[in-house]
Length: 237
Ligand SMILES: Nc1ncnc2c1ncn2[C@@H]1O[C@H](COP(=O)(O)OP(=O)(O)OP(=O)(O)O)[C@@H](O)[C@H]1O
Image (cartoon, rainbow, N blue to C red):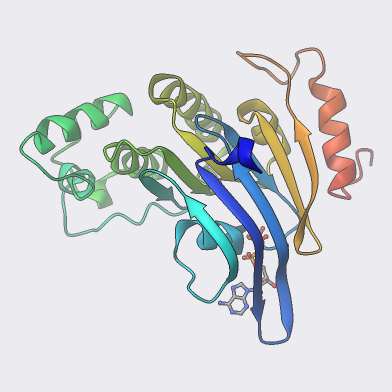
């Protein structure tokens, strides 16, 4: 265990029950600095529950969870405050006299430098999610916890946001735990995949595909098939 003491996330024996139902039954999970880990699993397997535990949003879980450094969470829905302008929503994540400058930089990084004075209701779904990323980034987190952050977006916007995420990661080097049910997304973005099943991490797959990645590169289809098998998804119809 010593070698892993520098992890951004070190969780051991995480257990969460709701009444008689055991959702997490001894989860061990480590995330190294700068690493992108995708968390997959069937619907109801406990992905969001685990993410909430790691985010410190669930006080009723058992087990040991250590996270180091600052963290930020991005959910499927943007959760912007409708009564605050875009820039003020982003600025919620920062304090100090350079807050304004950092807010402007974060908005620029997500491609919305000209929308700071807009209201959230004036933005598209994709733009709103960009603001959610800016609000997370402005804290300069060491760890991003992402719960289906692209899940509510149309296919094209989703691809653009995945590319944006990859660029942001390259620029900032944060570690990320990405909950997703999209196998291609996991394979495009993550260094390592974890499959949650039966309340535990049932599989771990290292993604040695290099960067940049695309769905038609060598090795992608093989990993994809393996992952779909693990998720019990038929690959032929
Ligand atoms: N607050 C709660 N009270 C009772 N049961 C809950 C609660 N939160 C989650 N559960 C149950 O825990 C199980 C896991 O839910 P969770 O949302 O973590 O799954 P998931 O893997 O994220 O699913 P999905 O992919 O569908 O989002 C489900 O059976 C769900 O009904």
